[in-house]
Each structure stands twice: as C-alpha cells, then as structure tokens.
Length: 110
Image (cartoon, rainbow, N blue to C red; front, side, top):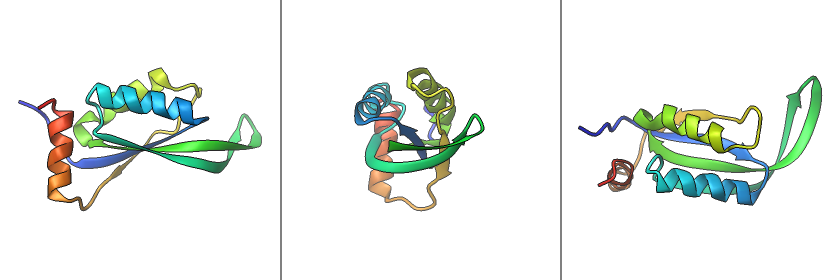
C-alpha cells in the first residue's frame, strides 16, 4: 500500500543555479517530489562560525507529501554542497484537488 500523507512544501537554498537543477532532477526522477521551483537569485544574510555572512543563493521549493519528508531531507543532504543545508518543511493547508492527485500519482510511481 502506497503512503500518501499531507501535501507539504520543502525548502532549501543552493549556491548556484546548476546545483539547484541537479538536486531538482534527482528528486523528481527518484519520485521523491512531484515538482521543484528554482527561484533566484536572492540575497541571504546569516551567521556562520561566529561571522555574519552575505551570499547570493537560489531557493528550491519542492512539492511532495509528508510521508516522503525524511527521505527528501536525507537525499538533499547527500547531494548538497553545504555543510549544513537549510531544510524546512511547511504543511500546505489548501491545495487544488487535481494538482494534489497529480502529485500523489507521480510520487507513488503510478
């Protein structure tokens, strides 16, 4: 029996467009996510090793189901160049029924 779970949005940032495309393609090809939006370029300000840093980054919005969250996080960590990649999951409160059915069909390999 295939897991479904609730629709979720997973967010991470990457240092460049090519890194984002690589992660996006792997996650979609492995049926871990249904869709990835690569958004950029954005300015990020953050603390790292006791310093305030500024970088240009790209944001990845990944649509999947809650049942896949741990696998998506694990796979991103394997593919990511950052020592500590941003990994955030947001539950989607409302979603179009047709879109969610399409997501589940792809993620569950049907």
